[in-house]
Amino acid sequence: MSLSLTANISFLFPELPFLDRFEAAAKAGFKAVECHWPYEHSIEDLKAKLDEFGLRLTGINTAVGNAEAGDFGLAALPGREEEFKAVFEQAVDYAVGLSCPMIHVMAGKVAEDRHEEVCFTYIENLRLAARIAEEKGLTLLIEPINHRDVPDYFLSSLEEADAICATVSSPALKIMADLYHLQIMGGDLVTRITEVIDSVGHVQVAAVPSRAEPDEGEINVAFVLSKLQDAGYDGLVGAEYRPRGDTVDGLGWIEKAGLSLAD
Ligand SMILES: O=C(O)[C@@H](O)C(=O)CO
Ligand SMILES: [Mg+2]
Image (cartoon, rainbow, N blue to C red; front, side):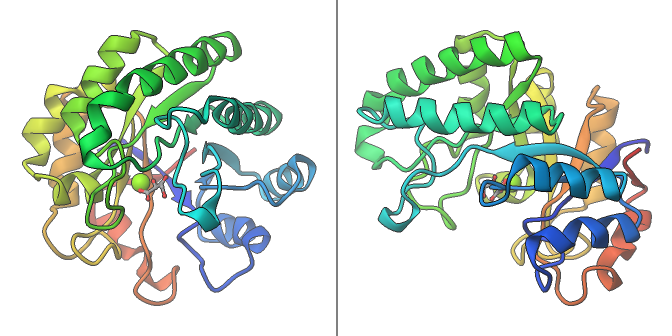
């Protein structure tokens, strides 16, 4: 298998302060990293770390909004369009400043009985964001997130994510297929993901149900990834799991899964 990894340094190396995780990832052999929310650090400080350790940054998320009030994204929230624009612009500034090609646009939490009602807002916000992404050469990702960990997250279905990509109809909008979330939300990973493979822009891995290294539990990660590759997926694989112990000691799964560190 020739798929390459990117280390999610929001989850890996949890014992280290965030800025020290770049060095740890590079020393472990990674050439690429992704993270969730880098915004408490300046673009300059982050760039210095990437340059110092010869890493590239492959993905960041839009800020969640008001985390203390329970926000987990804003794109699907009617009445919050200006706030969405602001967090999206912030993400674009960081992505451009750090040569980072992908932004995960976080949808937010919406009670199930309001799902239909807010679809319009989500699609309009994504249209606006996708236009900007096209101009800047960025890829936007939407990620179905499981309802056990994040009840009421607007986007939890792979098939709905694919339908939204078709509706927005922008080459800049793709699905982040996180095997952990998708296994919890219905499984049948190979068949379901290959059906939407043209819309998939990024893949992430973790074990289910533990969310630890993907060498245990319900998912045969080597098998699933090889089938996705056979179906035409040639993007990165995000190592987005919570290590059982020391991050470096837990990296043995990479070779067993036939993966390589990104170059
Ligand atoms: O799967 C996840 O939790 C992440 O990919 C994310 O972006 C939201 O935390
Ligand atoms: Mg994920």
